[in-house]
Length: 354
Image (cartoon, rainbow, N blue to C red; front, top):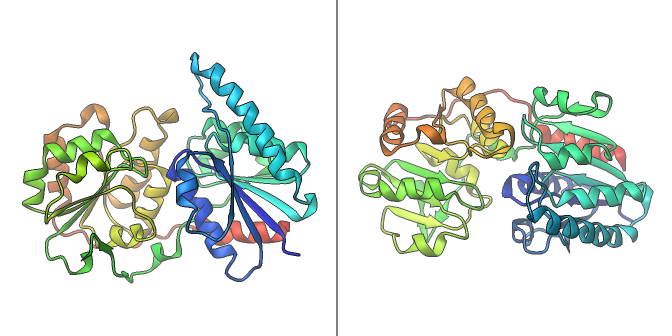
C-alpha cells in the first residue's frame, strides 16, 4: 500500500508551483499516492489538472490583516472549508499520510483539520516576509521550511529549517528546449525577445505599461506577454507578428527566461528565485500591496546578485521603464549564481517522514 502525500496551497501561482515542482520529481522513483486539496474555483485547480493526482476542492475564505465587512463572509467560508478538509483527510491513515502546505489562504483549514486528526504537517514559506496563512499554519505544523534565512524570526526556531526554494532542475542547466507559442518556434526568432509577466493572474499595471509603449517596444523586441486569464480576451486583439499575448505559461517558462534578452515581471519569490538561478538580469516591478512589502525584498536579492533593476510602483513611468530597458541593453547573457536548491532537501525530508 503506497504512502500518501497531500499537497495544499493556492490562491496564486506562486503558492502552487513549489508544490508541483516537488510532486513532479518525488513520484518518479517512489510510488506515492498523491493528492491535492485546493479551492473550488482557484488557480490551483487549473494548474494541477495535467498531473497524475486526485484533486479535492474545498470552500475557501481570504484572510486579511485589516477590518472588512468581507471578513464575516470569509470567516464562514473558512469554517465550511475546515469541514470540507476534515472529511477529505479522515479517510487517510494517520501514520501513512503527510500533508505538505505551500501557503495561501486555502491551506489554513487543511492544516488545522490535519492537526486535529493528529496527522503530520510540513509547511514551506517561499518569501522572506511571511504570509499570514503560513504564520497561522506554523502553529499546527510539525516542521517549517523556509527559503530565506531572514524568515527564522517569524517562526518557532526549534521546528524551523532553512531548505531554500524548490526550483525546477532545468533552472541550473544551460540547455534550452524548444519553446513554441502560437505555432512559432521562439528559439529561431532573430529579434531580441522581451518576456513580460505579471504572474499567473496577470497584473493590470504591467499590462497597461506594455500596451502604452507597444509601438516602440515592438520596433526593438519580439514580445511574449503573459497577461493573465482575466485579461487575455482584451489583449488578444492587439496580437501581431511580434507581439504575442498569452493567458498563462507553464513548463516552458524556464526556457523562455533563458531565451529572453529581458524579462519584466512582478517579484514573487518563485519568479525571482528562478531568474536568479538561470542567471538573467531582469526588471522587477514589485507589487505595492504585497504583505510587508515582501516583493521588494525578493527583488532586492536579485539586484544584489545580478544587478537586476527594481522599479517601485510609485516610480513607474513610461520613461523610467524605457530607461531600465536601455540600461540592461540588447546583450544579457546568463550568469550562473550558486544558490541552494531546496528541491532535493525537501524531498529527502518528505521521504524520511513516511
